[in-house]
Length: 364
Image (cartoon, rainbow, N blue to C red; front, side, top):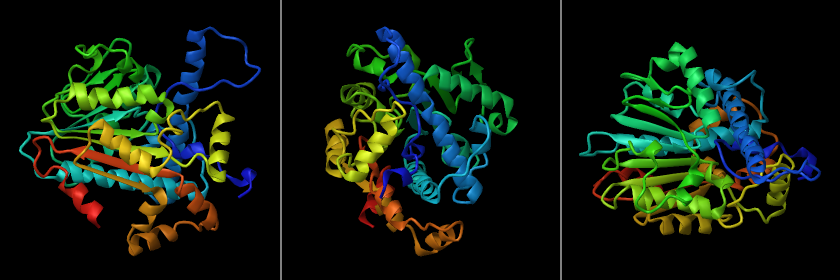
């Protein structure tokens, strides 16, 4: 496929990330200024994601009444293959979350920790479900500029605010929010690579390490250096949560950077100043699976491309999606969908059947 016909592939990515490159000819900056510029570029990828989500919602792929609140400015119709990609990855991750929350458990509640959550609406969608999910707490970590924007949106829209039960506390700088069921935490994950073994950063010290937890990273860790990405998950899996606590990780990331299509994908993103820093180290399905084992998720791992996930969608649902809009670029879709994957790994701890739904879905 010729490069000019490839859509902006970053629209499938979401969330905050880290450390990006600067274009040639840019003014010389000191290290701190340079890092701030790089961080700002990555923070802006969240707007791409919110536009893509709203596009998929407006066409009818997804049911998300909250997407329109969390997009800055007006929406934009995406290419059909981008809409389908947004649908497939969102649905796949939603199914994993649903299995986690609905699984039998002796614990009083469960928790989800979303890394680089940005404008993600999953908390609000879960809270609005009927019948409601089992009790859970939802934590979101992101750059202060992103958390402040989200909190501002929540305070302006009663439809969002009303779904947060209990007393809400917002910090003086308006960048953090806490409640019994939902917290938004301004936090730079790179801090975890330098934190001492005996120190838990104050910002996340309130997380209950005795409760089963699900970590989610949708195109967040990809922007960290490999060392920082590994340190982030190792912190949660090996330092914060004891081995007796059930824990799992979901990753959504691009793969296959060395194919002709992958090279164009990387080039397109680099033109925007975006560098996918862990892509070389974790650029294959096998590398992603081994990564989960090394992190300690040894009870089970599953890694699938978006294309494989689409093939697993029921024929009835494929027919529904097919009626929404015509996908003429079948070859382009297969190429695009083959260069992104959803990975998940888990450890049982003392959780019994908490991950039963994940195991059974993997057998199918």
